[in-house]
Length: 148
Image (cartoon, rainbow, N blue to C red; front, side, top):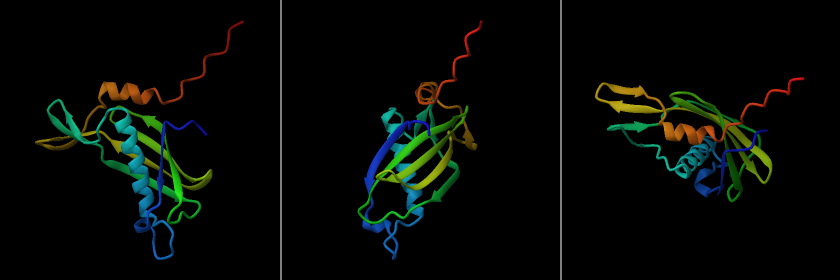
């Protein structure tokens, strides 16, 4: 598997569990989002801000999560973020959520970069400095084989 672009660790809180003492499924989406927010802050970019005089944001356009092993109150989880795709106006992330090295869940988020205009919300290109930073986390193509 590819090297993660970013990771966080967090302990499962009691309020995040259900009556069986297992993390409620909806909280895994919060864990992924918290990792994404920390990643963007590490790049000096806020998820909600201003660009060229317009309010911008990153709504989710697709989200998935597959559950592999229960997580319980007090567990220390590692949430790893991978960048799967960078497009002109969106980014697709993949996440691994682990307890020690045991897979607990895996998921993905596709997020669009949008501006809130007087005419409504519309997708806009990623800011160039952010795009460059994001690209630095993607694997480069293998060099061509030497010619003979």
